[in-house]
Image (tube, rainbow, N blue to C red; front, side, top):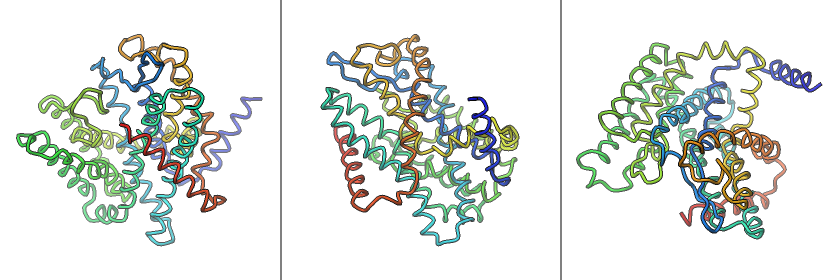
Length: 402
């Protein structure tokens, strides 16, 4: 009976999929989405102090050879790429004004963020009253906020979509080149011979052009200005630049921040990140037809649809899924792979064993929290104000003590 129910769900999804749906782009988005929780769950650990409080830790501090895994799991570039592609299609279909289109897209991004932060603001005082240490709550708040920077950046590049479309129509794939040049120039200034004379805020210039690079490539792709030949150039040139920056210019190998290291690649993005994005984007463009062919199978297409329908829920709530296991476990002491220090090879295998549990918790949570992705048509202005106030308070708590 269960098998029959699953089969009918798969078939229902298949029947409701329009023939013009670009399955390859949806598949790439789903892959990039799933890489976020898997990466955070694998590369983010905890230490437990004498008072039973949790602190953030990373296996990358102990295992440098683990860094190449971050090259695979850092797929935000692909997310921005397909985001730009999808935005072009959405912009074409929209019948209202440009302002209305932008407001609609930003609302879709903002509702889930307000939802998770408001829920945490209401829940954390209760947990504190139940005896959860304040340090643990601050650690948890930091983890919840950690992936949400992406939403702000994504909102900014989304608002620039009309300008990106104009650039794509004029310059094609080359529209992304000036963004690469800006990041390269900033990296030269902050890491080159004049680094000591540069202000500390200089690196922040890279935030917008760094992630807009991938989005602009996606917009040009959606405008049919990026051919397979261009994809091959992106793959080869990106791979060559990546290898050069690692071997000759000694960029940090990890795509994510490592505790104790002064330099980081992703916050804000360095030229190494853009090299990886170029290589990944080229591979995605070249593999598009093959991916689309594979996803014609209903059994493989259905999970892609489900993941895409829960995109913001996965992004906003996956850290809480890990915390839902770690916080209760901290009261029991050192639980292997969960509250033990991530500095042994055994920890890696123990953490891998925990991944299915985190996935189940996230799936169960999503059943109730996906409501935040839908329009808040029944929410009064007063309730929206309360949600906004709670979300702001949570942000202050999470970042104010950092």
